[in-house]
Image 1: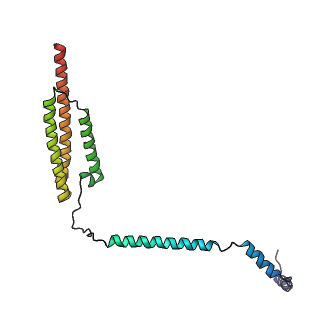
Image 2: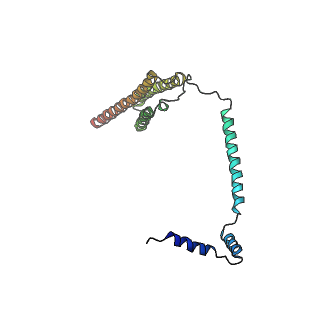
Image 3: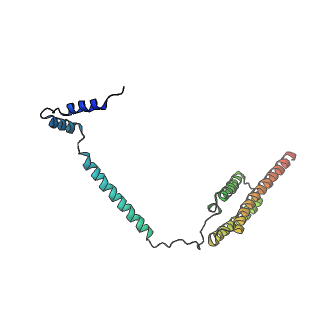
Length: 186
């Protein structure tokens, strides 16, 4: 397996001393040019480069315009304005959605009739007052920013409205059972 390096070098010198046939280099270069792709795609990339540069320039200009517009920068001293307790945190959003959904559900279940009109109107008037108070507390939340007392008052208001609807539902059920019981006895 081991070969004498001196013999290998002697054989190499004999081979390298041989000359290539005439025109070999020219034939090789023509075959090479036939096999290589043409440079026609270079123009296409130039167009894309120009288009990309224009898009980047427009984007940078728009960003610079937005940054230098006359809007005042928000400082840490400013109060963040919120419109509802749901914007303060996701948990409070879930609480608010829960109560509002249940209030609307209970309102949709109530059956209004001429016999329970007076009772129904009294509860609806009280619900209207609570709704007005909720709006006032929401405005206070917007003006003064989130604080524990306002958030607690808003949640208590929602609880009170839902409890009021439950009581109205119970009273209407009692009124209906009393009327149906009186109708059976008559």
